[in-house]
Image 1 (tube, rainbow, N blue to C red):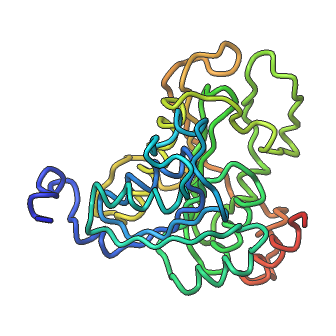
Image 2 (cartoon, rainbow, N blue to C red; image 1 turned 60 degrees about the vertical axis):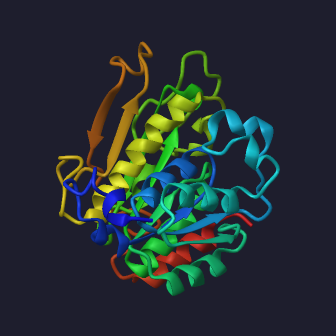
Length: 290
């Protein structure tokens, strides 16, 4: 591989060696996580990919996944490594089969050994996002996570940093109307259960749109000011993007809204002024259903 030739079209945007020194942990190798990992990996970011044990590519996955029929029936995470290395053979990639909820302590130990620069929550359930949040609090790491709304009408990308709003703050304080028309679930936004509104059906392009914003926010953070790929105020920690017009919900198609959610004094995760990162992390893990 001729790295000078490989990077010649992007070297005016960032210094390739700056990203090769960075490491990101990607939790989830589904339709969203696979795209985020692929975008970062092809640029040389060192990766640790984590997916639940035994997760194999099924035929119904293919219509929305970066992997195709040549990976059918094979482990998603292992095939994703192969896919990324086909774009950039020099990328350093490790992978692990781990259920971060059922094996939360193992996950925390893995993060401690890896010492990454960034955690990426690419899962579709709340429990796993809170475990990632626990790791971020314990080790003082930033996180970037995302979710696609039901029907693929849009989605969100959130960012947490040490000392500011944690994911618990963001999830608890969202006051956005995410429902699609004729959706039967009555969502209480004061006690938000994001599992109720996760995408049950969405097109590949719906998921890709949100995943690329997810990857852009992550890349911008990893570049640490070397290049600004967003131009957003530093306090923005939530982006809500409308994929299409939904009267009464999203009034403008292909349109983002930006929010700053402050750290909540009453947050059950990080709002205890006398607690430290370890106890905050323990509180999250202890509160998860067995």
